[in-house]
Length: 138
Image (cartoon, rainbow, N blue to C red; front, side, top):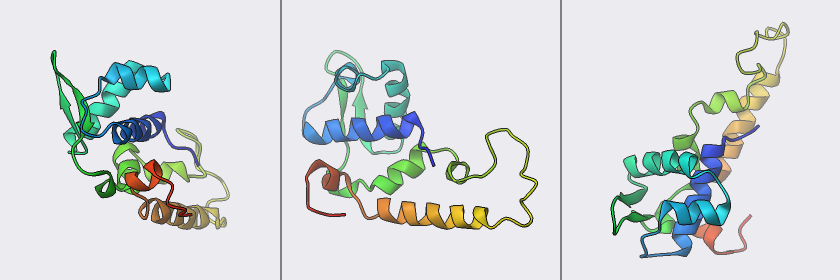
């Protein structure tokens, strides 16, 4: 199971914005802090902004900031937003590969699906606030 860089970058950006409440932050500042590609981060910011998670303003006084309180941002929702195909994450068929010859007899696909459901259920119980502050939750 592997999440994309876009999901990773989106969570990093949200954490950074959560650590800087009420302040507009330049995308370059986030990219520099996390040593990630600014071009990739811009795509992430655009998607988060288009979906109302963050506010983005261009120009001289521009920057990005959270659109809602950290306790309203559910990490599971962010993962679903950023991942184009969650079923592929737990797939037993390699990307673009041929179907497995054991598909009819194998029970792994069902197990993978159940595991993904459990994974997402955990993320659905975690907010941005939870990962900003250690609430001793597991």
